[in-house]
View (cartoon, rainbow, N blue to C red):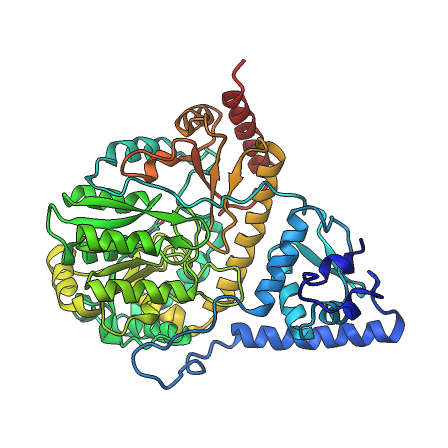
Length: 546
Ligand SMILES: Cc1ncc(COP(=O)(O)O)c(C=O)c1O
């Protein structure tokens, strides 16, 4: 079978005419040159359209409240995914030449620009590479990966008090050392962020701060920063007013304020299963009960199960992540987000939406939050700059919808405000431009690192291991062979100078005993590869004890 044949669509949907007569190599001579020029032009156009010129106004659809975004997967994303699958499964092998854009466009029955965008996406993910004047090739590092984790979780559908903090602190405290290989860390490498540039902006901004800003910028926060945040929402098609935004000390404060504003001790709150451990800790601290809901590694929370829980338990809030959930990396499709909002609106249950990873997408556009579908104010959207621009500045925000007043008051009576110099610096940075360029570089680095980690898992872990393949963020969820205990791996790995995040810290009941969360937010190097080899050896040793 030739590469072109692999690239051809499913035989059930293609015509015979397009199967025959295609060769793997592209046209030669002047035709090839013309094609390259054409590719360059399409690429240039794509670059310009995907945000070099960040134009917040172009997305205004002229509709009230929030506009509803496009269909779940674009044609070129589907094509890229099909090709990626052929690469992962070994049908397309390292060194194989991809069909020319023209050939692929004919055989796939899509436009050349669809093929080009798909290739561009695959290139960004490190799966193919353009070689000077001779087209695209599958990269040397591409190889068969282990199968993808496909099973939704099945937690106990009951409401229960939470007691995870001891377990979480014990694990996290032991993994914070700087010379440990940080596969268990919650943070990406600080080297991925424009910290020098931010420092220069801060040096230029702080001396010129109006002394009264120390008073004016308390409460909901610096108006210029809130305007910049509102403009970013607008780019993504959401109409958020400056006065709808409350600036906080990171997203974690935003999430906690939202939780505090809508619950009282003893109430039940819905979380995903597995869930971000800080959400579980927040429930524990506030004397709340958790109801863990089945969650799919690709598509997020199971809406049928959630509907039953809302009916049966009457929880006071849902705390969920629709974009690149921590730890699964799941990305809820747009239609499902819309249904989720309709569901919570029907039950009048606030949805606390944690969207800290939304900017770290590997696809062509930022996935919208569920907030995009919220016309009645039941979604409390929370995000921050911690994971995408300025770790350590501790600047986040919330758009709490109909609970704005309660959240603002809670903010005033707990931490009063967020750092005034940090807010002013971020406002000035965003006003200057350059954020989108930084984000493109960050996303590219993360997607390449994800690919390196997936391949490393395939090289070193037993074949009955399963991993997620998120379309963004910087975590892999790894399901080890069933009898391997992640807490054992955690303990032994630490003694080898490697941290991992064991599954039980992501569950109110200590489930996921055979799962690990691994962080690929750090540059891939020999140390990372050696750490993965050690982990693989440990897993095999526990799977097949002597
Ligand atoms: C899922 C999730 N939400 C929220 C946070 C907290 O974000 P911030 O650092 O902005 O407080 C984190 C940080 O690890 C996270 O992983």
